[in-house]
Length: 114
Length: 112
Image (tube, rainbow over all chains, first blue to last red; front, side):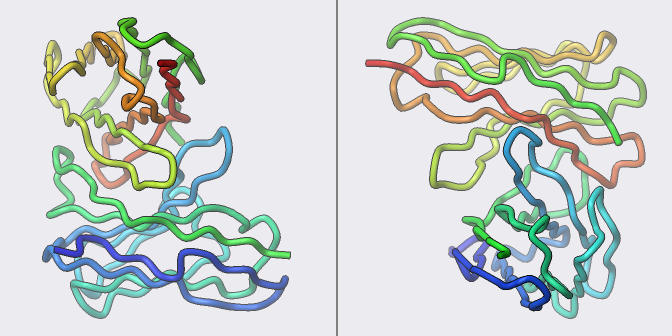
């Protein structure tokens, strides 16, 4: 099994550019989420989805957009990149939204916005 | 925004030492507490998911305890090895059950 696959691994953007971070899982997981990792701040939830067609905001949603048209895919869109969005982004999924369901993480995307 | 605190932020130990670190979380409306292990250049991987007060989990040399009434969990590593070097993250499910909030992590470095 591939698990959770994120692309790209690295990306450099200029301020104002838009881009999409891809996330796909092949475990038939209902719950998918996007986190950003900043030094000293832990992982912060951006958006999450409990199933196809359903998305909701996390702790830091501003400047990001998501959609969930299929169970497998959960892309994260940066609408107009800003230097404050320089971070490492992780996609994670779990079988369901159950509180005792462990998350499976992708390998991360390191994004720099100049 | 829930406050999940981990201490210490970093820890250097010698190979063979036993060590432990703490995760503190809001004690009200507890749902679950997760521990993840995150090696450099890899993805975080789940160690334990704990849901009941008094829970104790063990995986090899690593174990964890949970006190939901006072809002803390301890992670113990017995006889640390260099391959235990990683950042250990705890995460707390809030009372709405829709958001897993992570602490800042404890970075463990084990010297051979």
